[in-house]
Image (tube, rainbow, N blue to C red; front, side, top):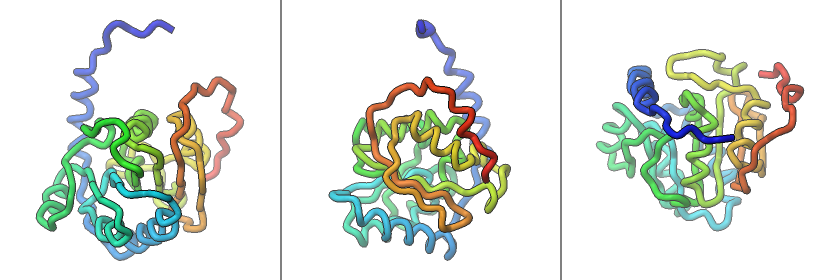
Length: 210
């Protein structure tokens, strides 16, 4: 297929600027901290060697001490008041759109994305961007529709289990582990493989599960 000679990205930038108004602060709370620590301590310790992590949509970077306790160099990206609050706490964060990162290719061993991808208006593009910046792994934790609902402020991409799997595969990620024991979260550990187009008919894979 011939690639268009020109795409007008001005409109995309305009739309994303408008959506910035939907961003809301996410201060730490005991439940989210407990769930995040559970995933990090149970899963990330099994990755060898994992020396650096980029926490995308990191809130106030409450995961930084958890990763640093494992001697993993931490970097976070966020937007809005969370960035200001995180910097005031001395966190290592950058104010960036996680779909358009300013880091070079293969900058971090691991991308950690917990309750982040649902905030992307173009999730497969976002997963491809994380693929670019990651050296090897992505830990993706998504809210389940049953636990959190399909709609909400700044929630553009609440996905079913099969949709999560499909987009991960399309973006070039191969699943290492899955865990659905927490009814409010889908948890995936995936690694980079060569990205290929999916040409087969996948409609049958989209069950109506939540």
